[in-house]
Image (cartoon, rainbow, N blue to C red; front, side, top):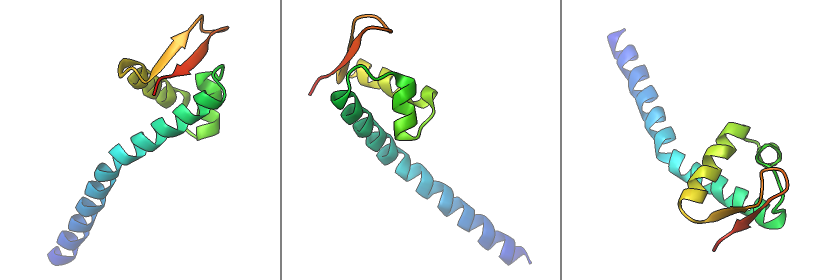
Amino acid sequence: MLQLLKKALLEIKVTTQDVGDNVGDNVGDNEKRLLELLQDNPKLSAAKAAEQIGLSSRQVERIIKGLKDSGKLVRHGSDRGGYWEVVQ
């Protein structure tokens, strides 16, 4: 019985490690999709972008902050009337 428990715990550990390894890839994919959306529609809000990508608006806001901090995305104008510039 202990062997079965050990085997089950090892499988869970491997699965958890796999998920952790893929997180960076998923973040990169989400960043790319968001940049493509904003390049096609610079006036898109974070909430609308979240709907189109299939993420929460909080996740999109976090990605936007990272893109702004890295200089890949610039906001021009106000929150309501402004637009996004994707910097390549």
